[in-house]
Image (cartoon, rainbow, N blue to C red; front, side, top):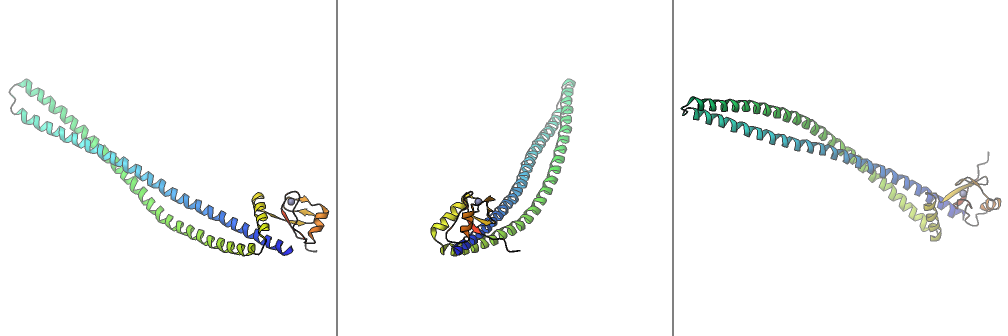
Length: 238
Ligand SMILES: [Zn+2]
């Protein structure tokens, strides 16, 4: 029984080791997720800028089209003027031309404004793109480092798993099953150390007869309070 208990203890150590390695892997996976999210956020921001830029270009093109149309109107009016006979008509066309020129000036100002907006946004976008490029490069390195770390941990987990399999093969299946059930119920701790009459799993006092029986190693004994399997560990003599 002593040997079986020692093996169970080894299995528990391996299980705890594997568990903590899996936790490390999970936090590495979460970090990989964060890196990917940061890239997505940056890409989305650039996409928003790009569509805003396309919108500005469309607006600019529409203004330029109006501008060209007004210029055409002016030149048509100027041509017509040459054929005008009455002063009244001449004045009317003159007013049209003045209004159209005012419109042309206004449109030119609006086009300049759009160009200014386009240049500002393009500059902002170029800066964003270059910081994204940096982020991509940096992320690629961090990602591969983390993936390598996850793979390295997986090799440790696999080799510990193989070590665990060897141990469990040498033990009665019922005992392994009992251990596994207890482990799940007791947050990874199926075994508890018994020392000085106490169960260190739950810190409760063990019945003296039970504690004494532990020294005989005749059977597997469990703590009556927390049901963990007890392993006797005497305090080393002072
Ligand atoms: Zn206990």
